[in-house]
Image (tube, rainbow, N blue to C red; front, top):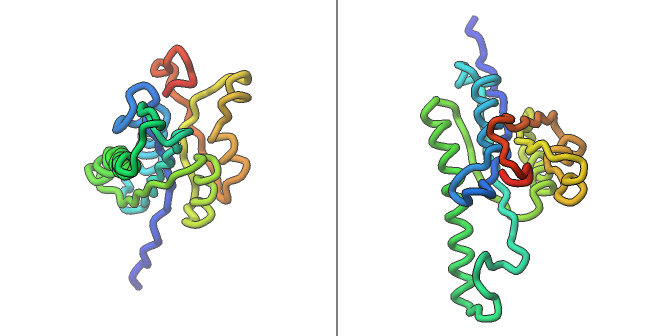
Length: 178
């Protein structure tokens, strides 16, 4: 009797860009969450897992990074949409390349909006076995003003959630930066 192969365990990993280096660099927290998942969960069992890589782009308040919106033209909006799409793809490319190098299956996609809400919505839609995301380790004062995606997801996501704290040696002076 042949053994049936089980479906791979599907792990959603939420990733974001670095606030220090910007695109296409991954944040310290999301790189740490990805590396922890590979080293501690997947290990050498690459065929037993599938990584679902989600990047949520946070829209700029006025839609412009460093451009004065008073002088915007319709062409400026097309350039911005194209630039944002490319940035998200470059960030995911970094993680997809790593998955391919180690031989683990993956899917990757970009959504726009509030990371807390989008991650929980995507968990409900995709139904991963669990969610892994980075945690910046903000103090109580910073949590009030910045909010924490990891705490929100731990409370509201429809699957088990693992929040990976940053390595103390990699933490910038200002924990809000990542």
